[in-house]
Length: 299
Ligand code: AMP
Ligand code: ZN
Ligand code: ZN
Image (cartoon, rainbow, N blue to C red; front, side):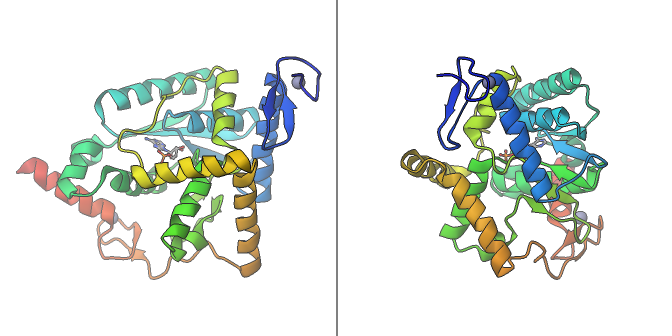
């Protein structure tokens, strides 16, 4: 197979896109798709400094590289979750990528807040690791970000799976809020997902073409069976309907615009009495987790 742009071999058949591209032109294609998403959703401009949340997984490592190649000002942000070898490996990858790409960075350690890692915290507060991890990550990104824009590496497969899960549960509150961009409001920073229209297999290919080191495999606490099952089922649908995921998310966003689905439906928020973070109850979840963990480590 030869690249449709330069005629060189070997080239990849990107069947959902109807394109056949070589390494170089594939990388350029991914970068231009990301640029289009950034511009279409007015995520940020070349004047902004974007805080990129880098876990060490392929998606966030790719995001950092793509934004850097597109000439955006970035700062990499990593949260050390304190999970033995996995966190050590993630940090190693993180330091490797920021050094190679020469980007400034910021790193936070969960143990500085809770005196323990995420696994122990999950036991202390009696909640699933995955659910407290999301809450804590969002809090730290909002409070400790050095920028008003925070970018995460969620890809097309993640976004469509999340949308499906919320449709299955009729979680209307989440459905109306789902978007590649969440505007800053009520003291939350702007959250953007520039890889929203890039397939997971494309981020994998981009990482491999560019020789980007990353942590391989799913998070050990990850997601639970339902999300994995949904992703598997969506892959089956995509097999017989190439570009199904792309069309699904694009159509959802169009429909949302038509019916005026809003992204600022967080109502009745007040500042947490302890830390000032917006919350629906007097003390925010992060502060409640912290109180429990600190009193546990004293007793
Ligand atoms: P996940 O929920 O694990 O699929 O992660 C989604 C996105 O959240 C990643 O692509 C990163 O941008 C961000 N993220 C996850 N874990 C971390 C972490 N430990 N430090 C910084 N960012 C993270
Ligand atoms: Zn080519
Ligand atoms: Zn608080």
